[in-house]
Image 1 (tube, one colour):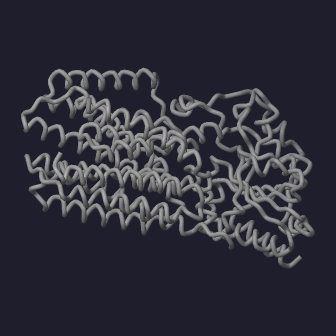
Image 2 (cartoon, chains in turn brown, red):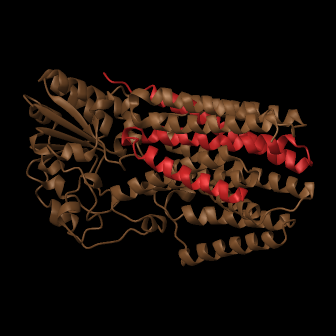
Length: 464
Length: 92
């Protein structure tokens, strides 16, 4: 080992440690900003030491690539709206996958040009990079389009025999990988594998519905890491392997958390099947029992309220009502109430999305609580305001074992003293079932557009 | 033998990842995802070596595309994470 190789290996070790420490510092909002910087410094060290590589002859391609890529990154990061973070992360996942496909191809072609014998494990890694990378790239593009609500892909589209089709495509990829193993110089086999994996990327994500996007984005996040790790096996590069493993683990954990929050298995989500169950009809549940109320009537509930809880769902983000909700928090706090937010894990379009949206609207993060913590003392809450959420506050999850959402962890708002539900109509949520909460004796329905309804309520409380 | 060593590193890194990520609160799951996106941009290392080797026009093009993609991941990921984390404040 020459000196440069030792320096490079040590620098990669330092970079890997930086990534692990950076992720560790993400465990608290107080240290997270620094943690992100530690990660960035690790990346800078890794890139700088790689530029010392003696094999580099052509600098122009590298300099041009670094400049164009950085500029693209800056534009994306500065311009993206917080409501569009899921799209941004989906796009970044896709870029990671695409980069792995290209690096694997280039690295393999260079090995071939050198004319040395190539280890089988390396060829397996080439095939794996191509497969996972292409699935991630195209799958992420579909996810991006779905999140942007492009009409052609927005609704889940399951082909008949979806499982069988995916199985055949995957088998074809394995067969092409095996062929490459026997004939390493058959680059056409690699590109064919990439083409078929691209189709697989489409067929895997197309059947999945909008509300399941958090799971898909997390899964593709994991894939982008695994594709990077596979590329590391081709290049014998530990920095790639360690980072890829970290990202792969992170995506899988988030995926599991999301599935658990919906009480569904990953397979169930990926196949786009939502178990239809028997349940009461909307008329049975709502018939004559739903009480509508005006802003002034609801404002009276806030008189002398000790504890107020706000439960936001994705509908709040759609109505752009985050700032209005922040005003509601402030006015209720001014009247002497303790105001908390209960954030369900699947409330947004990606893990943690709702927290970011509320943080952007200047809601202090210690007010953003998890369902378990809130449920422990929810019977002492005087007023709950549910805005844009439906299935995650549906008591049927607790009471009706035949319901499609049976067993899903929910926020038990029906146990609070008074519940106000801000909603346009009695239309069902993603699960397509009526919500007995809306007809409960302690619930008042406040019909209207989220943003305007909350602002009217804030004014009514002010004038009360 | 190299492969087995790398595999060892990979498996152990997954265990480290699971331990570390499990301690990240749901509050920060979105920044965690964008931040880990930035980290997965580490593929840029492989892209730099591939682009600089100058074997053929095709490898140069592949290297260029890979550098652009991975670098957008790195810069975009770290910057947007920084922007987001700056929004999490203690008092309103």
